[in-house]
Image 1 (cartoon, rainbow, N blue to C red):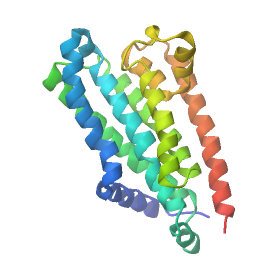
Image 2 (image 1 turned 120 degrees about the vertical axis):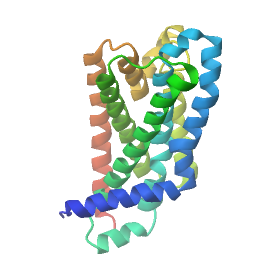
Image 3 (image 1 turned 30 degrees about the vertical axis):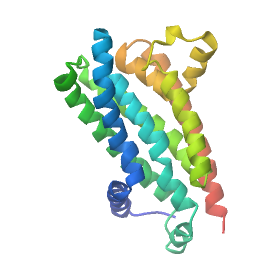
Image 4 (image 1 turned 90 degrees about the horizontal axis):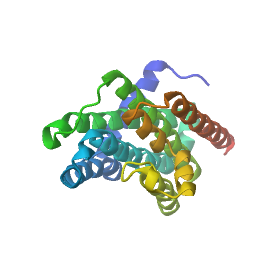
Length: 243
């Protein structure tokens, strides 16, 4: 089934507005990440002046990971786990449209939140601005997309707030602790450092800070995105066949 592009864009804008009215999603997209930035930014820079060099990147990765993994799956779980899905089928709307709308809406929300941190950090904490702005935002866009692919898969596969919350936390917390944004990965045991490479936050932090090993990071991020895309496509096909 085909869908008109204007209709798709209208649906994406509508989802963006609905997200602004969803208190739970709004908390994970804006409120908690920005409060964490305001609170921890001062602590990090007062304890270690060198933290200013990577403050923008670390706070941004925290916010993106939280929004994509804890926030983005919620609307999907609610929609595909309810009778609204049947209304979409009756209306002839492809089953993938809601997932795509949610992805695009979440992408814009997280990009806006990241922009707030990018602009506020130098003023509030004298944080260093990334030297290559283009490369920074390209890396950021890739990070958001890959994290959202993980969040989309979680939202499609797990129905019910309790299970979804538990699984999302099991992904978010290791992603946060093993990525290097809280403390250098060199301090971790080798096994945990290797486990951290399974999360996009780890590769995103490397790309956005050191700029080294970009080709390896791109390959890893592409692999994670491709794997999640396969899982998402499989799940959407199953949902399309459900009565």
